[in-house]
Structure formats: C-alpha cells, structure tokens
Length: 252
Ligand SMILES: [Zn+2]
Image 1: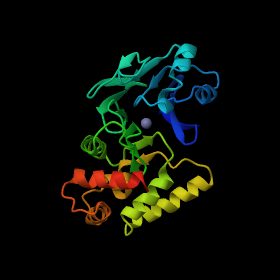
Image 2: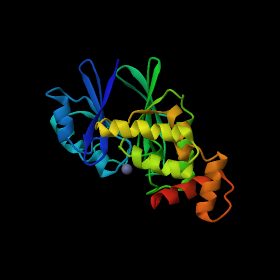
Image 3: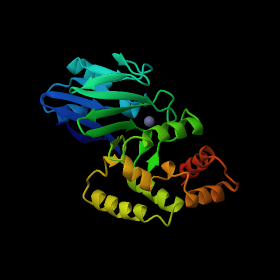
Image 4: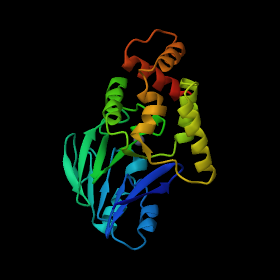
C-alpha cells in the first residue's frame, strides 16, 4: 500500500510524498530542503511535476543532483527526463498512472491519476483545489472549465491531492456563492477544526468537491443566480457562469 503524506513548504504549499517499501517519489517539489528532511536519509526515485510554476519546481535541480532521480512532467519544464502529455500511461510503484492535460491555470498543466488496486488518487497541482480552483494565469475560462469537467468525471471516491492549503478561504467564497448549501457549512466546520490543530484539510475527494465546490457546480440554479447577479448580466452557458465565478473569486 502506498503511503501518501504532505510535506508543507513555503506559506501554504504541499509537496506530496509517496512512499512504498523503499521507493520514494514527490509531487511538485518547490523546495528541496523539506523533501530531503522528509526522506530522512532514504533515496528519492523520482519527481512528478504538474506545471511550471516555481513554487512547484524550485527544488527539482537540487533534488536531481543529489539523488540522480527521474523527473516526470510537462515537456516545457527544464530538467524533465520523461515528458508527459495527455493520454500517456506509466507505472508508479507497480500501479497504472494516466496523464490528463488540464490547461487553464497554465497551458502546460497536467494531472496524474494513479490507480492503486481499488483506490484512485488524483494529483491535480493548482487546477482543482478543495472548494476552489486555480487562477487563470495562461488559459481561458473555456479551457479551465473543460479541464475541471474531466476531473469531476473521475469516480467520487477518488482522493484529491491539491498543491495548496487554500480550503478555508475557498469555503468562504463557496458559502457566498451558495449560502443555502448545508454541505458547505458542514465542510467549513470540519476544515476549521483541522486547521485549529494545524492538520491538513487534504486530501479531498471528488464526491466532496461535487457537493461543495462552486466551480464544479455551475449547473445549480442558486450558483447561476449569484454569478449572474455579480456579473450584472444574464449568463447562459456553464462556461459563462464559470468565468463569472472565477472573476468574482479573484477579488473576493
Ligand atoms: Zn501554479
């Protein structure tokens, strides 16, 4: 069984550390030092990267030099030894992994779905967050909406490993976008309790996101109405509603 735990880095990043037997991988190491501490003298076999931002890639060079490890990720990133693109499959810890292109936050962004026997794990970087989604730095609302739709279609039990602890701030926005949703209120209480004890609120699940994440709920009437009121316009398509929600969140 794979052990997966977060290594906190910077203010609110999580570098996910995957470990089984003597094999270790990390996802999005923005900083090498906390990874080296987490490995505690053991060797790193590989690095998985979701996108090019420095807070996800800043530790790659130092880790590669220290461990001579593999670097799987988008071809756009310097140091990648195994370029990944949509539809690629590879094996990690003997389990099947599938690559999904999820442009929007950046154009090179990928997500990796790891199928461990009966459990599905999703490493989604800055595309899907707990109760939120990444900012649109490079892509269009249409691209991001499509990317999130692909992730939302994964099995509800899929464990979601986001790259930042943004949950409480995202839930405050989710509550503004959908004040009558009791699942958001319940999740907020649970997240507050976790953070009060300095515990991560992650991983999430796709099922939890479908119930509480406004960016996956653009089809619900209450969200449509709130997004339209904020935009001061009638919004027709799910992409228009998504775009309005994202603009609203940018200044929330
Ligand atoms: Zn990013």
